[in-house]
Length: 493
Image: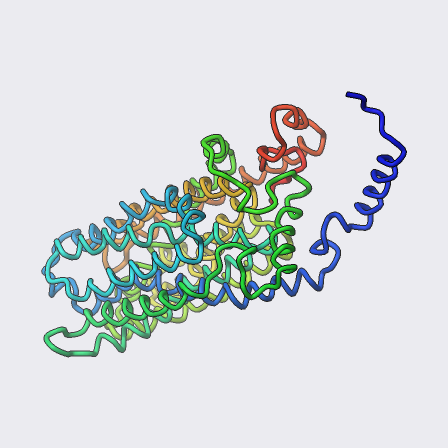
């Protein structure tokens, strides 16, 4: 076949070049900031409130057992030794195992329906926990609760990445994730009131599960009808806006030739392999594992830690509110700043420094006021690290099934940190909990080391791509299958 172009073809090519220079082919989403802002605002209004609510309820339903502990659960169920810690741990067995297949299922079922169905399921299980009468029943309910919540965390991150550009994602992840520390504040207040209910033989702690689980089911049933599946299926966007909402995601990937939208992509084991062998996936999965040790131990044991300072049950519940609310504010602030500077690693470094200060205050002082002050530093530093490392990996994987697999693995490995967290603060170590604080301080140090090492790798790899050292990949197969391996793709620092 001749490679010579006719004069008409040359004219068309010249016209195409002119269009590219003016940004027309790149799409209005690239040249019209007003349209891009309008689409983002509509997505925020119609998606974020539901995601925030579901995650708030998820964290309340998994951690309210810590509130119930202070209100008589251990006594009523005749728990001894480490049985309470075991009940915390079994939640994560099935929670961890279903992360990756749950992310694969999200696209098949439809993201909006999938997340809502998960919430309905765990809401039913959470409500049932109020009727538990034995240790075996508690274990069974915690196992089922973990199975139902397992696909939620990674599913939300994957779901949001299907609607927002890479450096819009962090703030939206922050908005949804700040529901976790807020759940500690809100859950503490709610549990204080619910524990006063006495009705039909159920006194105190069962009502924490009854009411909070029922609220979850109601909210999830409504969300089922309002959450969209993909940008192209957003009924609140016009047809033109739907196209640009999908197209801008394609153009956001630094010129890498990828599928324009998720509907065009199909599952392949090659995508799974590329996700699992990515250096970022491995490093950030390990980092997430370590990050969740202080976060989960803080969420589950803060009431016990504060009670160990000499406060009574109701007072201790109320004192969990201020540090959790500070964490809520810090997650929002760090997420906003991270998107502004388009960096994730440096913000994690800052968080580790703050958290380390908090644990040092716990270990170095005998004064209750200083120890309580340390919980504020831990909350402000640790909680922002979780959404930051999740957004970091999401930014550095593409396209959809590679991202789905990588995030699923990250959440699965990360949540294994809960097995460590649930045994960091043992009743035998009360009231000072020296061992638990020391373990978490060590975890903070490891987080800092891994984060700095991963930042160094990203700088090296991006420099190699800029120098053309990865251009050979263009000859190995279709560009649409390269994803994050495309020479034009740049990792987020």
